[in-house]
Amino acid sequence: NAGVTQTPKFQVLKTGQSMTLQCAQDMNHEYMSWYRQDPGMGLRLIHYSVGAGITDQGEVPNGYNVSRSTTEDFPLRLLSAAPSQTSVYFCASSYSYGSTYEQYFGPGTRLTVT
Amino acid sequence: SQELEQSPQSLIVQEGKNLTINCTSSKTLYGLYWYKQKYGEGLIFLMMLQKGGEEKSHEKITAKLDEKKQQSSLHITASQPSHAGIYLCGADKGDNYGQNFVFGPGTRLSVLP
Image 1: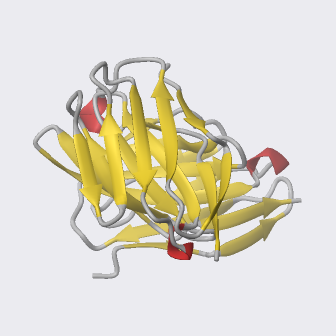
Image 2 (image 1 turned 180 degrees about the vertical axis):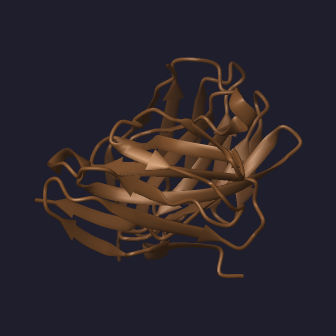
Image 3 (image 1 turned 120 degrees about the horizontal axis):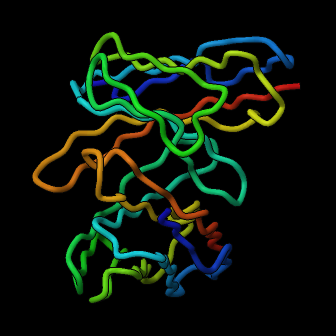
């Protein structure tokens, strides 16, 4: 299993440009999430999905769109990039057992917006 | 909203020393997760605690959750350079199938050989 894969690994955008961060998992997990990580703030949840066709907002959703057409893929779209979106983005997939669940994280995408 | 605080913010120890990282919540925790992150990489799951007073160990790392389920500690015994990285605690907000998850700001650990 490849686990959770993310592309690209690095990206530089100019203000106003749009792009899609790709995330795929091959573990057949129902749940997938996008986080951003900023210095001193830990990881913050952007959007998440509990299954194909179902998405919901997390803590910091503004400026981002997601869709979940398949179980495997969960792309994150930046509609009009802003310098405030410079961050490291992590995708995660998870499964639940009983009342607990375990998350697996991708390697991250480091995004710089100039 | 639930917030997690971690202390210390950073830690530098000599190889072989013991250390403790703390994670404190403003609300009762439904599930407390510890992750380790190496620079430029994703997070690696270490362990999860759910019951008050629970304690788990893996190799030289022990995590505890207090009886009130508002504080957790991560203890590393006889630290090694391989333990270096950022340690993050995360908590399940207890709703929405466990997908609404929050993280602490992280503790950066350096281990000097």
